[in-house]
Image 1 (tube, one colour):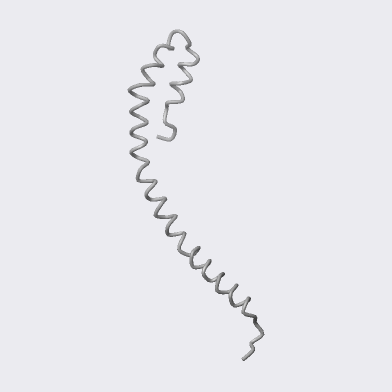
Image 2 (tube, rainbow, N blue to C red):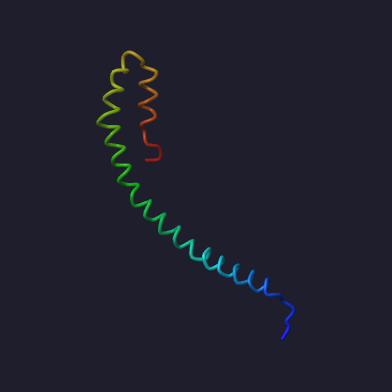
Length: 83
């Protein structure tokens, strides 16, 4: 029986439905990826703090007397805001 739709329209509807199902599942995948990335942040912050404290801060000390403006700016930038 003819319902006023073509085979092409049915195919388009099926393709749209398939695309919707793929997109519908993505928000959950994004949330999982976000959680996984967030879990790794604390380790990265620890590694970065270690590098700053054990390496860069020691190198910067040589500027304390030779370039006081640079040294003061670096020390100011090292202060954690909002803590």
